Length: 172
Length: 391
Image (cartoon, rainbow over all chains, first blue to last red; front, side, top):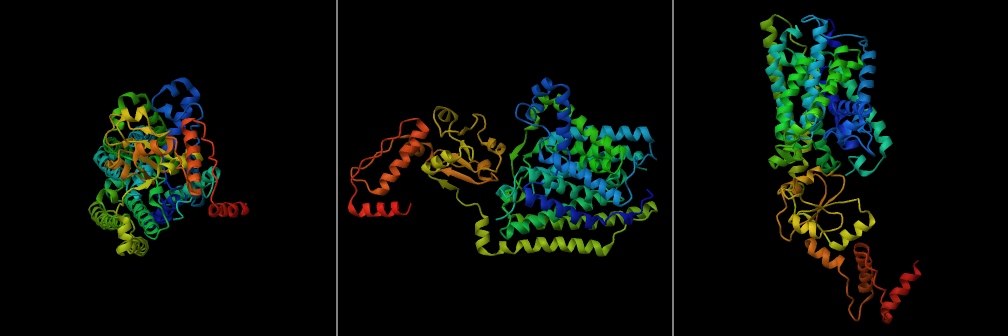
């Protein structure tokens, strides 16, 4: 960690800015932000290219593909494209845009990459089960006071704190 | 009510997609500036020493809840048009626990994985790729998961509806809870830093106070209108608005896809005869939770037995709800049955007769009754001439 902390925004100010962006989304579109919805649609779109029949036959995937449906034509896909662009512009302006792997000191490069991938798989499964992730369910649903979103949010923190001691070495 | 703009047809799909990219850019930029393009900044949350995730996320939630409450309290925002994720208790508990596990293993949540990948982080890219693979795993086991996925359904329900208070009141509670959590988190950070012999994250008291006072002020102002008697009266759920059978029929003729019609009567009765285009309540769905699957962008028209209690899923439905006046019996009598005309009709009665005949013909396929030949009285004739002259 040789990044100087002052290069990031004050967390409360960043939270205020986050709230303004999210409020804008609600006032303009009537719905909020998401993170995993686009991954879901990209994955199903890829599966549909490779194995169209099997994908359409699947009870879950079949809701997104088939005649008259375009799996990538969804607001969340455009929004995540924007997230990528916004993140890249911000990192470039701050001098942080470069190929990197975070926190390899504790466990080394390959184990770190494996952890990132396997953690992602768990999250992808969890986000489908819960109908959203930290962005779409906890942040967005929590802001409009969804009952299930608050239950989900508390469980995310509980799950994270419960497992954290087991993977502590990774974050040294 | 001018917000949300999209549900008031202020712009079309393409503009919506462009706005999606722009709003997403704002989201990505804020997350990157908050330090969430780096896994160690995110994972640190779960070790107590740096609660940046909690601070950013809860300030974001508190700000949004306060601002939405403010807009709703002053009549700018129609809360019923704002999408709220549906509550399915059990999958959301298990999904939440699993997502927390995945979060601390990967060091990213799905959204921050995108932002990290955009800054050149290989682990961020792999985490997001993992999220896609996780979708496959879910799909492969779908037939086993399907039942659990729909368990614990409570429909679309917000904390304010659940607690029976107004949105701004809960928003103010969220702000108070967030500030309490921040005070606790900062004390924990200071204590851990002392114990570990490191330095606690910079608190920057002035920026913190400025941010939090802004949010608290927004939440506080939003409470004002609900103190006035008129506003609190309108906040309590009122009796459902009724819709006359002929008005429903006319709306159906104008735009058959502009409404959701749900028939909550006994499914057998519904299967026998119902309003054209109505969805019958599934036999096993006693509480009519199937209405939660309908998008709240169209009004919901309820066909029920006269005097029947409406289920909570309908009364808490986020969109506009109308109850068909008199139920199906009235629709059958007033729309599907050929009207009769009194022997000495007035002009208004003739007009009504022609309208109803046309509706009956539309829905039953019966040929519209011929326009009655009536010799109108002089007074009525004068009115007719006047009307004709206006054309």
